[in-house]
Figure 1 (spheres, rainbow, N blue to C red):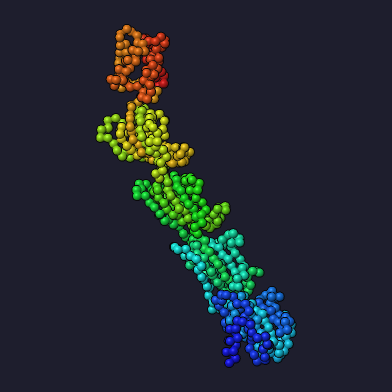
Figure 2 (figure 1 turned 90 degrees about the vertical axis):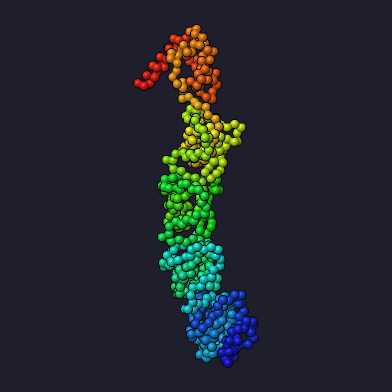
Length: 569
């Protein structure tokens, strides 16, 4: 009957009658402050840690753990406490406050005793304890984990020997905080399962995903046991950690590559020694960003496999196609290591790069030519010194249009080999027939180089679509007129059309025009023909008297011959 009566009293949650217990009565319990959530109640065999004030019924204090600054710790129900208090704490929740009134026969009886602080407790005295429970655990307890949030996809779980970075808030079981990585503005970085952590944390972290938040409850014997930790963690304290997993990797990890998008045609892939231009977004494993080329509106440009970028990126940039998109995950030992870099990337951080390849080339590359359309008859092709007119579209390798002849009223005209256009385009326009169409790929060292040009990025590979519209055969540099076969010999009689032994400008003009018309000679295209002929005439008219005679022509021929011999010597 006594045990049943005690059980009923333990379940009381309201105010009890104020009369003191009689000599044979059981403890009286007033549960005056009960937490809303009580996942666990004290049972026989549990270890507890609690604060208390001990008074007599008249309110006089005889003992207080608060005043000593150290809560009581002990095991319940095994005779290590006075019987009444042993019964009085059973069924308590952490953070519960209750007043336990203990009759003499369940306290110090008819003999009396001494309180822990030395005060005398008279015989047959009723004792009143005001108790607040701080902690509860049992030797059978295990580490408890509860996931609070978790990413939808979790491709990798924490395993023993992994290196992890995580944030945490640490509290005692009653909610009192003792430590937080957030307050230090830095993650806790460590190996798992290798003895660098308390045993319970080593166990509680296993199986977590990056981005997961979980609560880990660790009993004292898997934490800091009887010693505690300094002044922040008392002896035999249960610890509660709320952990957010930032990062994980293993020292044996290599780079991981996830191909997101590959172009339909890929005729060439990157190799060591190539120069690449790519856009990227850089994030940590938890998705937070640390850098992006898009924000700067400029690609990242570098050589591959030559140590200009971190080791993992050097490796990840090999085997890529122009236009390819891929995600690259770099472990710290292939990125910025334990030190990180400045305030941007912390030590031991796994880096995630989403890459989009814009173009690449090799410094030894020549232009690439692909004929897309060509007339059936092609008897005349473009070459150095020819005057040509052509249509073009110029784009980057990702299809971004830079400029086009269609944007202007007239298609451009140029002389090949005269340094009027970039070297690669000049070369790509050679050997074409009128009406021919071709695609020409120009590497940057044959284009606009490292400096780029207006509207053209630095080190950009250029994609030209070309069509030859017109072709006028040219003359070598430095010449205004060339013979297309053997010149008349002797020359002066052929020039002297009216045979009066002198050749004025009008007669000289007529002679040259006859040669051009008959296809035996050619004037420099793209220039005023009359102006060219007048310059030629003035060059032959040695005395500037308005006519050329045989002696002047002879002197000029001899002079040119002597000059040629001198240059050979």
